[in-house]
Length: 136
Image (cartoon, rainbow, N blue to C red; front, side):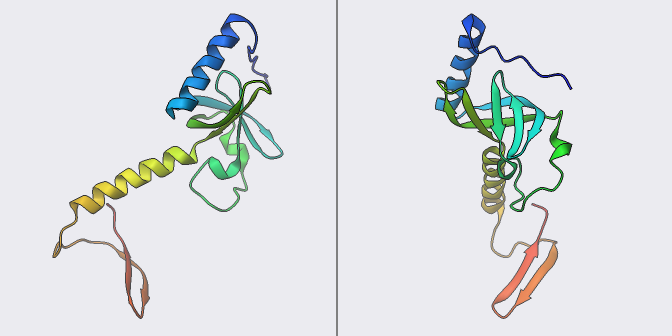
């Protein structure tokens, strides 16, 4: 396994930290490549070493048994916590996935109209109604 070299000092290191701080303040998405697994989660290269917890890697709430599958993948994420003095950066992919899901939900809700017919699958029937899943 090749360990990435993270330039944290000098001109290139300062430029990388500036880019990360800007992405953190503006809540912009950045890309990184997952290159290692550690006890608590994943390590991604975004120019510096960044931690990705298993819970923030996807929308699945339960623990993911196979984190090895993330190794080598390029992910789009957002910096959610950083401390330049300590060289500590935490990123989340889940935040972006939740925003994307909410945008799709809002778009579907805006397109619905009373009396409109939709095709879907019945998920559950209760005393107070029916839960239906449709591709929207």
